[in-house]
Image (cartoon, rainbow, N blue to C red):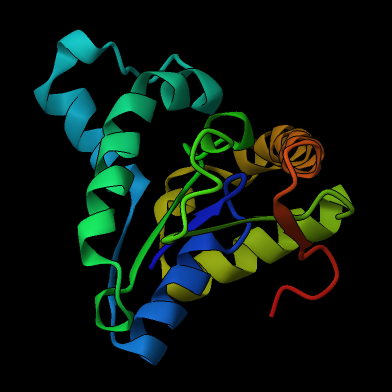
Length: 173
């Protein structure tokens, strides 16, 4: 079974992936690593920092879809695999949602209060050290509003295509 977790930045996708990897002793990957590797090593794909996550997702979809399709040869309980990232968009995943070996869900925080989300992001990043620590507080504060809008878009699209959406605004843990 291949588990796919999508959603906006800072929704808890990586935390859930790590939990599943540890709990089920399985393997997995964040699409951020694949996206960055493709951007660096295959520039003709067209991935670059000025593109939105949705634009990157569209360019990366043929690659991710091929990886997911290859997973059909590993469809047993001993071969669980978890993929997560912002580059999994409901509209694109709709193409594969009926595959028997794929399970898809989305995480988000569309009901979060911006100041609360900002404080949560800073607290988590300081404790665990991640990509957000590269930015000043004022920059993170600006990013939060965009992240909330992305979360609302993920929620709307997930529901439109019949995917499970878990809102972690109030209960992130």
